[in-house]
Image (tube, rainbow, N blue to C red; front, top):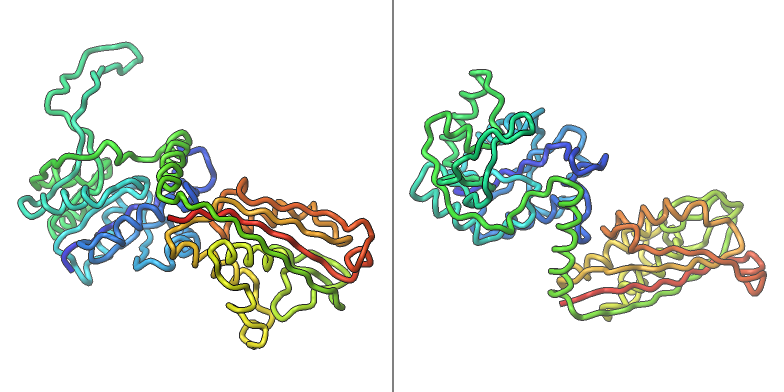
Length: 388
């Protein structure tokens, strides 16, 4: 292999103000890490992508990248250690060049990757950086002690590119020497005597660090998505199932205790079926029964999340995204309201939507008709989709 990207995603992201590490938080409908991975997986000059993750994040990473050609490796306690472990994991099939990138920089462009790779054709290392334009003050105790000459100063970015053998050896030497204070890989290279060139960075290639950064990234990516997808579609769906003997009903993927179950070939999740049809209808596809015929035994007792993910995947394949969904469940019993937060959270995860874009409501039929007599349950759903 010639060029391998090493994405560092093992940090806790504590400064973003959430228990969930920032790289797994949703921005514009996708985890931040997903945006970063797609930039490298789609680049024609990147042959492989290795991702350094924290121990315990294996399931989260799989949910983010199971359909991408990436390989995870467990990182260490510091960025420097994670970088070294990631580099060592490549030793079996060593690339010529390695691009080491922070997962929290989701706006890296293809042209910036090209610049770094071009720099590596002439130098052992190359990093993108921006010239410092602000006046710098030294204030060790909160009072200005002097002005720092900014001439020749640069603000480093990633991806930082190196010849694999050189940077791998430099990291190993630093670890053997007990040095653990380096804040980026270029600093390790400098210490080891590797010549590192600077190529022009991009102002847009910002690092997402705080909760404010996450909000700004959400606004930027949402704006870009809306401009790219001006075609607004609305789909609707309806489903109904009768009750039969049982002890629970499954609604939006959540099992709710009840004196009966819903009859159906799959798990008979009426609201999820209605929402699947709404998504399919928004892109002019046929209904759920056409895609998953009840005559086929492979769908017997199947979880309806399979159907919903399929419909969402068809939209994504067309370059579109789901803007919001809304479901109304109609039944006399069981009581739905206490379960709505859990149902919303489940649909949010399946559809990769923030919870405020998933509406779920419940009402009775005022004791009228088959629903009023407790013979069954119905659900209506609508979905708004945007396409290029």
